[in-house]
Image (cartoon, rainbow, N blue to C red):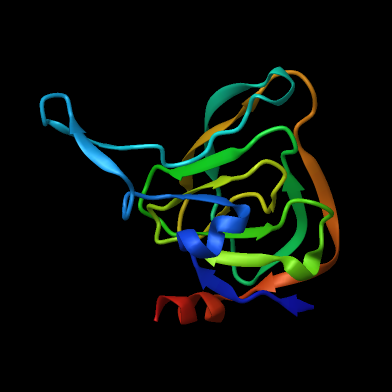
Length: 170
């Protein structure tokens, strides 16, 4: 079985797969007579292909047990998909570049809990990987006609191990 090394989630490391949604380093300015700070344009929402429209959903993810075996990946060919955590609980992300799925190009990232991600159109990703407890996420997704989710089983499982996560935390 192959083992995936878990990396810390940063804008630079995640750029080939989409956007990291976080306030740190984001353009911001005061609004509403100075009572609110607006963090502006945090992700490139792309859902208009074939007449798509934006959807807002909440997903409730069950925590995973270690080790975590990655046996499938999915992608949304008609639109981006954003995940914004509604709590400050770390979770994992596994992605691969858009195009033909190549399991040797899988990458795993650990969030700092409050970081969200926006998967670019067609980027392969694993379903939610909550860790410590049941976790809710606000999802901005594509609605409209036509199937927009391809799921592919991997020819061989890839494993995420707790020790790799602990190494990122150091």
